[in-house]
Length: 228
Length: 228
DNA sequence: CTGTAAACGTACGGAATTCAAACGGGAATG
DNA sequence: CATTCCCGTTTGAATTCCGTACGTTTACAG
Image 1: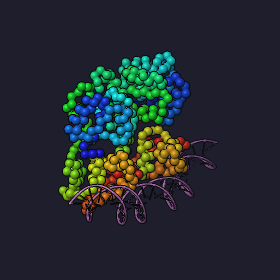
Image 2: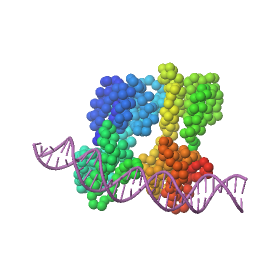
Image 3: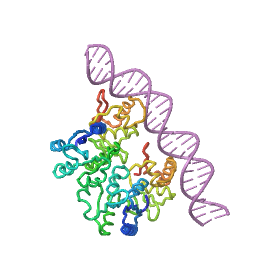
Image 4: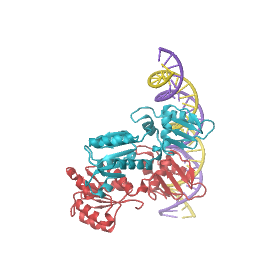
């Protein structure tokens, strides 16, 4: 996961798509735009964004159908989805029930309102996404300055260790498998051995555990690692 | 929702009906099968299930019509409905959803996919099923954090004991044979002795029964084990 | 009360997992 | 262009965990 929350927009109307990208990037989000429903499904298998904006009607695969399929997959089961619908397309009840979207907006909508809802939804799902500094105990990670401190003392981390710590600190307590860590820290399309994660966790531990401080990284045998 | 969700299947094709009952019961659902649309309407006045699987074409009263009528009654207004449609009726998809069905599947369909959609839909209706913590009495299992607590005190379980407890807690009260436990906890394609289950249940008991607390695992002689 | 089958508890050898350390290649930097 | 830093793999050791075996105990039927 990058410093900025990633938002995927699936919208076939060129004008709207461009508008959304412009506004979202101005807010500091990383934006991916897709025009076809079926392409979106493939892309979402590779990498799950932090939030999805989905048009109701799409070529290839409708937004309704895509939303439904996403809800049956574990990785995207709780992915926040905002639906965009044209006025009068369907009854309100069907919208709510049939799709499983978390929110929807009726076109034409107010851009500031959409941005507000996005921020609210991201904050609800993972508050640390919107913060520049992640803190836990005497550990502090500043994404903006790319610095890590333990008890006011700056630590020196390699790029991979930094991203690894950043990712782990975004979801304290949660256990990630080595595969998940590789996908999110190294990249989904990269091929490296699972054991490499062990090595980097070891390096990260050595770097952040100066003196005899408590190790904030927990290894869960047979499952993976977690922070805090 | 009861311990085991109840699912009503309205389908006139004998073969499909039997197949569905078999698979659904294997998943632990309570199943009622009905062959006629008009009979289904009467039965649904008596008792509303947790989910309804409805064939498109039915003798007596079509699935479309039944669906529409159900949506006008308060008791069944939000009842989750999955429609089964034959190929070629696909153009009618939108109509199916517009009629008020929450989901649909085109025959012939993949059974695992149907099961996945059922599970996803039940979770949506009852969000507690979506929660990543399983609780029973003073026992608490957090799947996301991979932690188990008994009365605020963390327990240390091996990977297999953890999965075993997780699986048992997913269906409190239900009895599983050793074979079922091996299939679901160890894996379907693995061959280990039945007695191994005994040993792990023993280890699990020793781990979670600290002090003189009540043992939540019940031995059913000649049948297997159950939780709660 | 007794016999039998199922379930339990323990012990043990082997397998799997994790961790630390070392190595060589390659990229970034000055 | 040279050096430094970083990364991914490998090796070996320590630890934990798992599956089987076997003797004992318990539950149920006759």
